[in-house]
Length: 185
Image 1 (cartoon, rainbow, N blue to C red):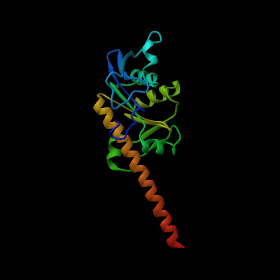
Image 2: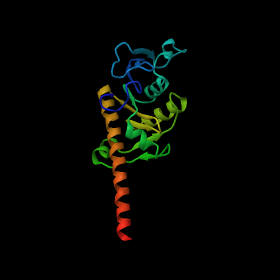
Image 3: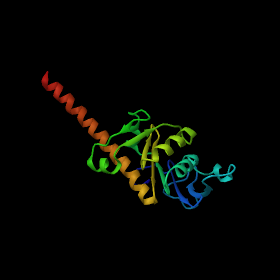
Image 4: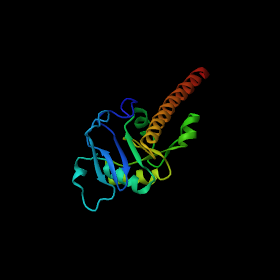
């Protein structure tokens, strides 16, 4: 994720469901050096788990997604274009990709709201990811779910690609319109 520009070393998180538990990166862990920075926590804890304190600040979001979807792996990134494009949309709106591959693969990209690790984000992400494999959190980043970590990575990469193409296409359209207006004067 870090090497592909989908997250900075200390921002973002990863998890993998194993039965009734999940392996999840710890808060502030370096995503490009995860050895020793993964903890195991229950998906449906009966009481607060002591490892929740060191687990990712998004642990409750991962739990909600696992409870509401068929996900076996979740990746959360902070890619540049997805964050920038998300700020042009209101929660509940959909980013419609411009390129044919993204349209085919993602269809549309829902934009959801919620603060870092908040119950609002957990609820919105889980609900939306029931029908989509990837979402963008307004001003925050992306979440992707998959049957495997590799599948979630493909989705995360596809979200950023779609947002990059959308951003660049929108700029090109703006430049073209301005050029046409100037030519008519």
